[in-house]
Image 1: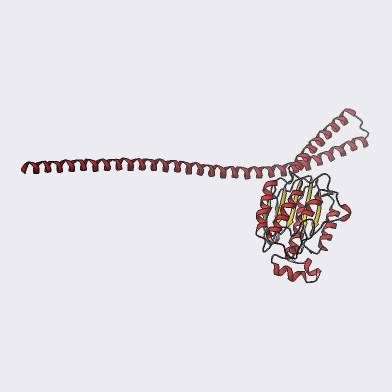
Image 2 (image 1 turned 90 degrees about the vertical axis):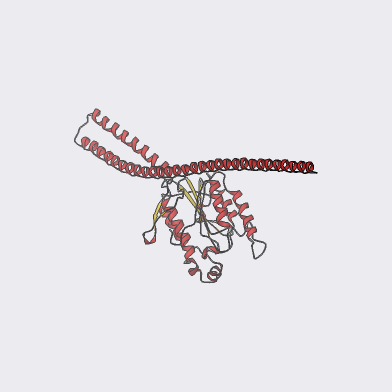
Length: 363
């Protein structure tokens, strides 16, 4: 009996030893796993911190690049001013030399060598002047332009005002009377003279006047107004380009716009189809509008147009645009048209144009 007790006791001790060893092994494995997780976490944190530091360095480099770009634009503007001043002095020198030649001839001086030398110098000056004028024309309209608005506020638009053949499309539908639907309905039932004085429409007309004042002098342009149909600002010039340098024509267009009353729906497709009549095709387009169109080439099927229908009309319209031409949109957002800003922004990005949604005191 005593022997059996001793064997039992020995068995219990062995079992406890085994259990202790097993528990110790479990603890050891747990410690090893915990340490491995901690090491991996530290490595992951280090990788993330390295990536954050790299991104921060890229942001700093981007800011430095932006500063350099702004400085370059300032230097370019300064060079343009200096070139214009030099061109003026060259013109003065040419006039002085020509006057000197005439004076020599009047005095009976006929030394052909001296006169030929003066003529050669005049030709050299004229050649230099032409080069400078050509460079100024190529740079014209590429940088952002400033405009002094009411209250002496200066605006940096970022609009690309360059190009040789520039088309301006002005939305003349009833929605251009006001930003809110209730005000559009109210103004639509008023006297046409009062409608033409509506704030939103006045801003649109002023925008056209501002654009034509900023275009390169050596460029051509055309203005098309559109509602359900597209109309040339000067009907007898349909399909033809007009010279920016023709101030009398610009004043005539301004007078015609002052007599135009916004009315009807909006067909952007008809406006873009009108561009196809211009030869050569435009190389820069400005679109002044307030939202997505309410119809396609023909009239709407009902009295109401859903947001999805307006989106379909818009996407059909942009298929008529000439390929590869920048489209610059000046958008005066209207109530109840949330998709307009997004769609027009995408159009500006795809065509390498720009989107401007100005404040109510611009231009």
